[in-house]
Amino acid sequence: MKKFLKLILIIMASIFVIGFIGSLFDNKKDIQKAEITQSEDTTLNMYFEIEYSDIDRPTQRNLSVFVSDTTKIKAINKLLISRYSDNKSNYMGFTYFDNKHIAKIYEKKIWDKNTSDKEGEKLFRHVIANYNYNPSNKYESLQYMHKEK
Image 1 (cartoon, rainbow, N blue to C red):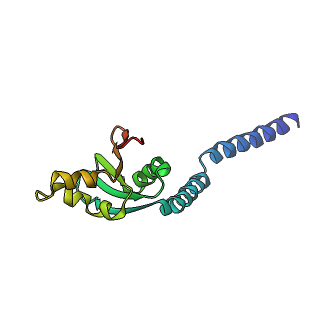
Image 2 (image 1 turned 180 degrees about the vertical axis):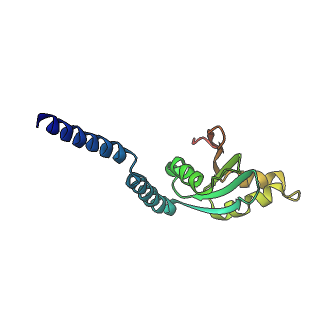
Image 3 (image 1 turned 45 degrees about the vertical axis):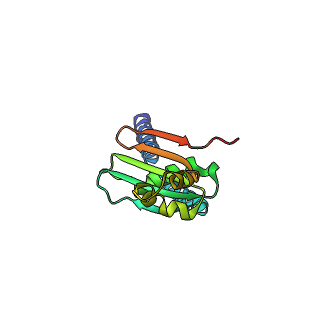
């Protein structure tokens, strides 16, 4: 009888251990993470707008982003990487602006041969930060353009 009780205890303990290990890999945790990310996504959306995108290029993706709260740039970087990252891109660049209109026209105007240096300087004053990310080696660089006086 004692052997039978030991066997039942061993089986029950094994089931408990297997259940515990299985719960470590439970998909519910991933669903909760996705919901948190979706919630953060919704919250962050009110702080930025993508005004220009060059995301159809095969190896690099560039975005011009108007941002209303510069303290959110790091969080927005993570959000945009999760949205636009894929296995094809080996570079992602986000340029942040404090002016919606400039964010829309900057890329076009800055490469236009008819844009004067003076006009280019005026446009550049509205660039807040540049963020570069390399998905293959996870290298990232965030550079703020103008120091406050």
